[in-house]
Image (cartoon, rainbow, N blue to C red):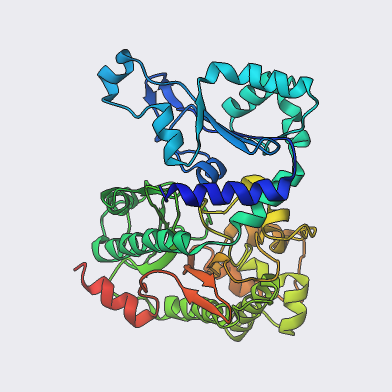
Length: 463
């Protein structure tokens, strides 16, 4: 945890923004895998972590905006629990660690909320995304579970986004810890993977590095020779010479802050000549996007600039024909790059995605519904304190090729005869994490091998 003053300050900022009423933060419970005592890895709700900092199940945090009092509700463990779990902190000590003076048993929550409702006080809460949280809020507030997201406090959503979007210095330190471990995860894969291994073996090595740092994974590992599938969590293939291996993996620190990086490397010692061509086009788009990062620039414009680099490169290789600006405007490039350039990152690997991309990444402006650009999670003007990823790629997706061909889509721009020869080529991307500064951007964490020569140098260490 940070010092209590950090959490007190965060809650006070929220208090000033929200005005009056009660803010209710429902923390996470343990989540059983197959029976009650066999649980998944516990991960606290990120907004609860931001304002209270306590990674402990079964808690509810209350910020009383009118009385200027905060309260932590939860139950002390019994001796029966302690026999199995060891000595545990009391609710009072947990509350104190977050700068909260009052703590109460969880059983008092119903009376607390009923009293607030009788007095006509407004009760603010964020849209719930876990079934247990929905159940608790539904029972407390007498609102149908299916209606909770519709009646959640939009004012609170905006206030939380307005705080969490701007990373404080202590947060940057913690994010860089996560990114440094993430770099080590990718280097471990580059130096470990050999032909004849399974994807699962590489994923296991990557996971080992994250856990050995006293942290965890920030999301399930993507480790695959089928990089054309953007979020591929299948690890059952044997990796073979001549293929490329795409790794998308990140570490999470013990405080919950995330790293998120991608790398692509040959299964053998070297990229093939063809692989180098496409890899360098994607890398050029990556570096172009980085060069444009600075306050005041809409991230959507940076995304489109990266798309133009990809479209130009694929035109030069004979896959596309025509004017690049026209192709990007119409979305032709999405045949090879059907996703977004990057996203916000912090306590969530996709920061605050549960609060809505329209508020986090679009500042309330509507998102496009067009294929490709609709997957862009961040479009708003960049500001100092934003932490984001840059991750353009090139993907040869057989089903997308077939679909567009059958629809006669963009035949004036796409050379389908050549494209169909690459149905089994795969996909690639690199991804790095950046902080927007007052006059530009800063790469977070250690530098990862990225150029063809650097990646091949790391691959030689595996043999």
